[in-house]
Image 1: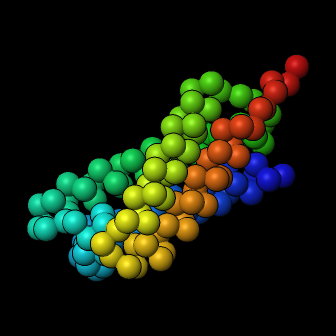
Image 2: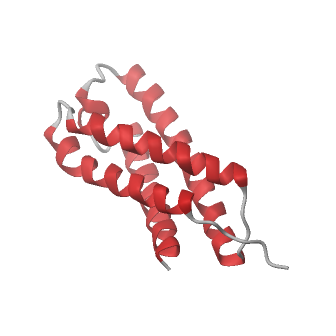
Image 3: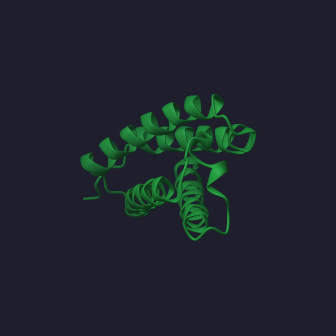
Length: 132
């Protein structure tokens, strides 16, 4: 049951993250609150936000695939490896957020990346078994 909760939580978080970065891309939200406050111009923002949206879409795809595998009781080595990589990325991102120049990023995104990291760990460790 905790695997399904972790996968749904990640699906929601990745979906909201994509919306957040899209709002930055279209300048509804100022880019100064993202990327540790280190972006200096619109060109940097466009590149970083485009990459972020693409990566989060890939993470969403991996998570939804794992969610379907849990429901169908199937396993995939590729998806498991990707979840381990995502776990490491989010763990490192959590550390990076702790040192952000922007207090909003430290306060809001540090817990979110920590939750994402733990949820990825839960899914990566989940051993599905193929049905006979």
